[in-house]
Image (tube, rainbow, N blue to C red):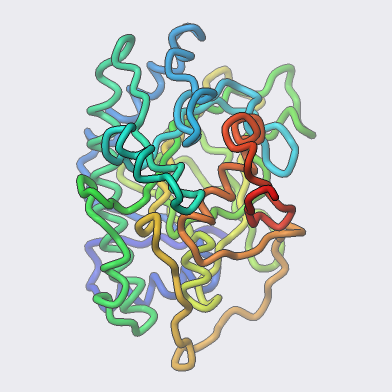
Length: 353
């Protein structure tokens, strides 16, 4: 079994039905898009250059001092369900006003407003990274907006009902997109099993929709189908995005769309790191995704034997769901900057009494 391949230039009615089937039956698909190839190639190239820099230079934008979990993370600091992920990365997200204004506005606001921040760009060592990544994100978000509208057609929902939940890239209240610049170093010593092969463990994305441009020479991404088997995603070029449904879209669609488990294995037969640029598309930080009426939709999925996290509450709040994911993956930063909060086993977060 392979992932369905969709093309944005397809007739809109046919495309919406193809998208419906892909999001309903597996929750993953490959998308042939119209972002200029040079934009994706430049983003991949700049990311590879950054990770090739000395550790001291990369740590000039360390995430350790960021309450919003933004910046560079060296190999071995992120985890999935307690198992260390074998990757280094940079975390970025939607940028807001000046940090002092953010702090003032966050007083007595929901805890997830602590995610409102600016991004630490490595302008002192690689000033070309910021414009390359910013242009890439803009292109991906424009594609995501079009996919969102097609999802509405697929679900027989008026797109005007959901559009106000999303914001503009440069707006004061933007959509709360986030992204990772990821480098998966090859596994050493011919390893083939266990933690040494884990790039990132099995998980479902907590956001609305994920779009990924990856290294065209290697992959390692695996997607779990509804029968419980794992599908290898092939290497894809800059003209194809890997797309998947997140928990918020599953909540919004009343379970009709599927947030699908996936994982990444490191390459044991190559000496080249794999670069991946996932963009996590979301509504505004304060938005809540209310389930639609699915009575008129034809249910085709006959099996659901996929891995599920043992304790995981599906939260309809964009801010709470985003904070849940970051707190789970980065416990040291959570404990350092948010000691007044408690992360419960099911992912909900409460203030300490």
